[in-house]
Length: 318
Image 1: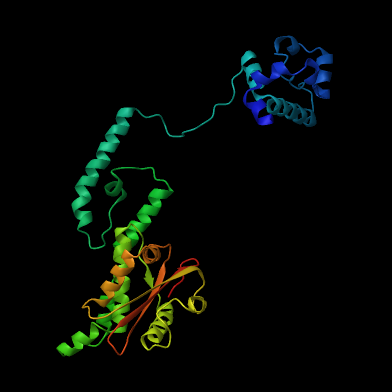
Image 2: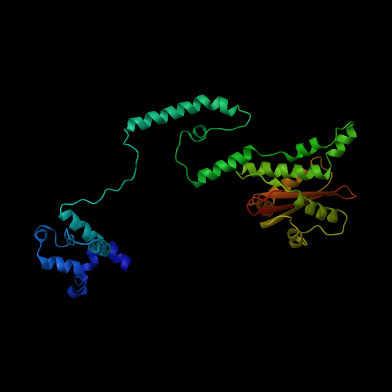
């Protein structure tokens, strides 16, 4: 009710009885009125009387307190009284920059656009892939949190690592075709290949890439091996137990499972199957930052995949 009264006092004040709004007068105002100073005839009666020149600091503080009290009690009436007394309130400084002509703003925007066009070729061909803000946003100088988050995701996608090639490069040099073929079915390679395919899909949906966590991958590899040897059925049984083994603090977790056989790209087929499944797709696009994928091959030649996700606390390092 008080908010409605303060928002539209002219609609509520006529409905109040005359004795409902008694005049409140401080001792300082009463003494000033009784003294009959010369300024009383010229000053607006709704404004408090200024303190005498010989008043003490306590009187001045009391006078300022009364001014603030009246302004807080009825801001609109206080402003009207100030204007009626021929005084102006202190101006509110909104922009400290000197006033500019609209033509100057237009010329500056045109210069920024020309600079972005001039540097686009050199920026896009740079090895780091960095692009200036003027090139990304056409000379914009004002950004909100959504723009900043989009820039963060864009930079993360641009710097997305390729885990499978890095894993192959860490192995010894192959001297035979048989070694090359066997490496394409290496569980460590297939797990990282599945993560690369997952990150490619997340990038297509404007999602930041996942980082490989070896500690989580070891847990996933143990589960995949148990399914491949028949020690555990192909299911999410004991998922909570696997999550409790995570080597890092985490806020949430998820799991995807897959198996296939007789395909050339086992990891790619596993990820494509997850993309086509609504539940698995939701995990692929979840708000996670870490991932570990374990792969095992059964005696019949089937590949079993266990993909574990984690949302770390503060970006844990693996």
